[in-house]
Image (cartoon, rainbow over all chains, first blue to last red; front, side, top):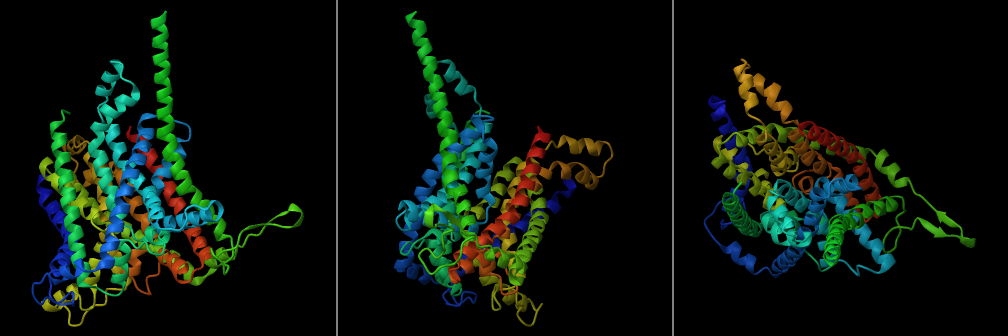
Length: 269
Length: 311
């Protein structure tokens, strides 16, 4: 196996090159002076300056961030409850359909989720008068519905790997289940909650298709602005925006990974 | 006596709390998913059987109270006749399945060796490599697809590079073809294939491979006889995460594909946003769903079976 290692390393190198070269090129050309994205004509940061003056884009970004944060918070709550149900409550009645409902959003094509939620909102508005118009609320509900499935996957794996002796000790000492959960279980699964939150946040920030269906007039999210601009052709401003997003996400992921890595080192296994 | 009573009360209270926790843990997510995931499909099914109308919302109601309290239900199957019978739709469905199949195989072909290399790397390297796989998964999907436009354009980076090398004289047409769709899909979905494969391969008992080697089995044969069958659950999980969403993919065929690469997700989008034909879009969604239910159930069954076998 050892002598085959170099072949595997070549495969890894090529694979990562495939994954990273496009993004790296994108970042390099965001500093290109020319409007022609693919012809290098000198270093410039003017696209970043233009970006900061694009009010429509900034508004959309702010709306997206608010939706993403609200979504992530609710998705973590619902996803954690669902993970508790699956790990802690064994073979309850209706577990099969429950698991099905929780797995399906992970693979369901976005166009189907988007269309079906829109039709639900329209029908609800027709019959019970809520939601009155579409926008922040409807986009957030739609995002929670698929994000919670991702959070459930992350929290579930952490919960099922968790050492339960601390919980049992607390129970033996007479602590009540809710107290045990809040003071012992939650801190132990906190890294999973954090990565679940971040995952739900980025999923929401990234979603074009579902948001396009359930958005109303006046609620344009960041991906919707990017999409309409991309459809018009490649623009250096989008390169600059992409660079900023990639930078923020990379820093967040690396910090999350480092804190989690340190935590798992500290924890006696 | 008093003490026993207090104990009993505490016990009952604990019971209550446990029941309450059961109800919240199961009930709340169940209710949410039923309301916002299951119920919508019922409504989509209902609207797919309606007719288009010049109204707000643009479809007719299925039921009507006729005279003397008779409930009249009218079902319109024309949308399904169109979706299932029309040449264009049939081509779009077939092409979507084809693209999903080809891309799943390509992801497997590229992703398997990568996952294997990561799983067999040293502990220290593994953390870093895994992070490198996850990182693109976190950065915007839309932006990663956009990056390929600049690369694949006729005067894009790839063509410029190849012409500079002197390999080609005239730019290749890649953008807005099926090839561009393949590239975009494999690029975007590769991490979805690598992660479950990696999770599966790291759990594998490497002692089995050593045993095979000790018994004189060649490495490649050991791989075919031991590693590959044991990693089947990972292969199934990864393929499911790629195949099913790709069949309904919209962004990639829309931005990278062309007229020759028709896909269902894009047809649905056009019917809805372009033609404002909500019932027809709903019929497309139901047909797509029906098409995906079979692989979804098959793969879930297989996953469960393999999980049981592993235990």
